[in-house]
Image (cartoon, rainbow, N blue to C red; front, side, top):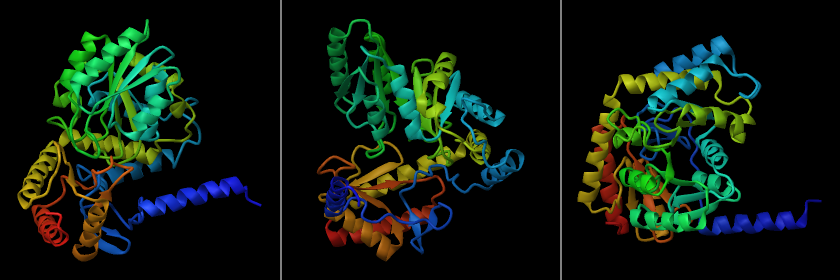
Length: 399
């Protein structure tokens, strides 16, 4: 017989999730992720994917992945703490070079990268100062740092950050302080104030850890991320990133000094105890992706051309896009019902897929549709989407 307390717990949790409609239906992708994809058996225009540079089904990357399988097989069958492919070592090196760092260490996912990058750096008596809207992986990585002080500052409020740092200095003796933030915030599309953070960190003897998940391939003239965007090379100690968004494969990494690389390779449990991650196919495709991004900077320019056009037109229609500064463009709405209705009607009537988000994914009373523009969207596709947003939005009273 199943345990009654266990069964009761699951029943209550499932009932609550159904009551609030949390992720009530998850669409099933039946082919490559592109601007037009087949979801639940229906061809739709996708306006909410992190495939920023349009590389998710790039033919060169696919070929590189196939060639890597031919040479190395499907997988290694052991952890990288025991042995490692030469191409995994090459990927670590290339990612470090791409981010303007001495070295980078790869992890199975971006989530694991934050898990395995944050808590090994912090010990009892240290302090973490974190933006209140940081990603869940940052929050969980901070929670794993046992014995450290954890302070949250108001979103992008540099005055509050400095005030909180001063408070932490009084409380700690010889411990170090980490300032940690997303570079691009995944729900609002705004950018961290890195220059001010660097000034504050230097003033109060802190070091900086940034999560470049939504900045890599997006910010900076050549898509290298936030450090390139602000020309802050040599001023940020730790940069985490993912391979699953603009790079369009899978995995994560932490970039920094050679000492950081050596230390995390031996102390980061998500790295040491994950077996067989970054398969030959993933390594081959990712190395090719890095080559393409650096060879074709016009992809980044097209991404921004599309983004600026779409934001401008959404605002002219009458939508509130909040404080977004990036291709992540939320459409803020009055109620969760209205956001779900807009998403549903766009999908059912206009063959356009955008995801609705409400609490607890976003704070209460900030219900939204989150759109993400990619470099491979055509002008015609964006125009058609804008027409649909205007028509449906007027019908349901969203504009």
